[in-house]
Image 1: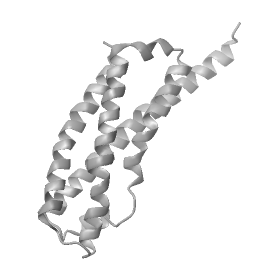
Image 2 (image 1 turned 60 degrees about the horizontal axis):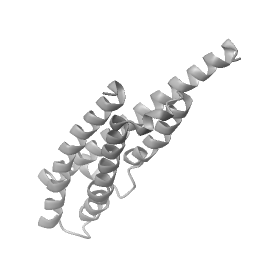
Image 3 (image 1 turned 45 degrees about the horizontal axis):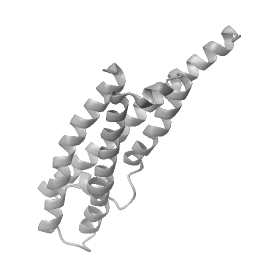
Image 4 (image 1 turned 30 degrees about the vertical axis):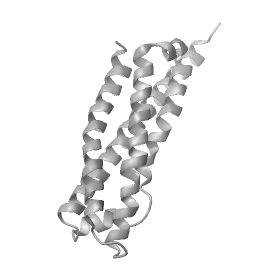
Length: 159
């Protein structure tokens, strides 16, 4: 038999992990979207100080935290005894959406950081191919916003 204390402790832990899962997902995708907004600013105003400050050659760690979303998602399922959810269509759809969005960030958004930083340092000019990459990544940004909204809806309402 479970004591009231341990039941409430596990409930608090469940809520904390659930909140971490949601916040990490939101902040990670928001950071990637912000990178795309700054990349668009680079195309429009490459000499803008905020652009050069943002693309300083360092890795944008907040955008990479989306990799932790499934880790906390699995913990949420285990703590909430929701293992059966893994077989549900809404869950699998949300995981596929997360996977597609993460791969898109890996292939389209994250490489822009280094390319723009190199361009700003003068090693590579603000070339037309780089501008095309930025535009392509910005189109992905729209997909990312819609995809994140759909995945969030699926996880929240479990249709």
